Length: 168
Image 1 (cartoon, one colour):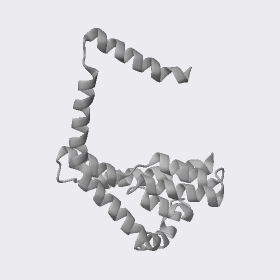
Image 2 (cartoon, helix red, strand yellow):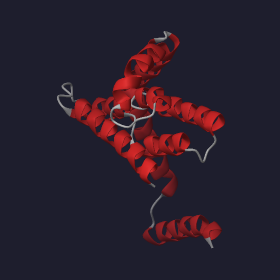
Image 3 (cartoon, one colour):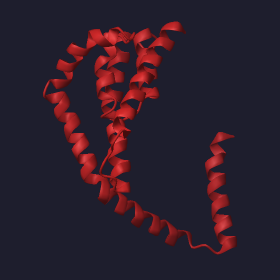
Image 4 (cartoon, one colour):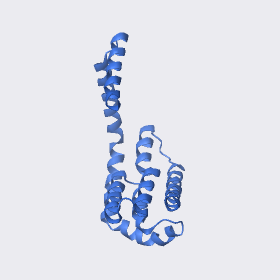
């Protein structure tokens, strides 16, 4: 049944457009034009985020901060194996997925560490990436409390994830 939902929706869209005499191709082209304007406006911000994430990991700052923060995060019930993941998650979704794959390979997918890492990735978001995209598009210069609030929510999500995985 699930294999037929998307084709059915597409056919329904084409039939509806034909009945209403809507030019689908022209609308599609207009949508692409708007999307390209958006990409052009946010590309510098995205490039900066990707470069900073690469430098963060390659410079050794990520490993250094991981060593420093292992013990304080352990007070909140976060295993030391997840420290680098928690540090990288607000910056890069793809980088955190790679760390998640490493955790799966090292600890097995059904271990407490892997389950907690999975929930951490699922319960937190790339705060700096989202801030760069949304605030670049809305032309807001002063982020004020948005990023600290997002980071606090990410941290609470990480602590909650580790607690729930330990209990369940």
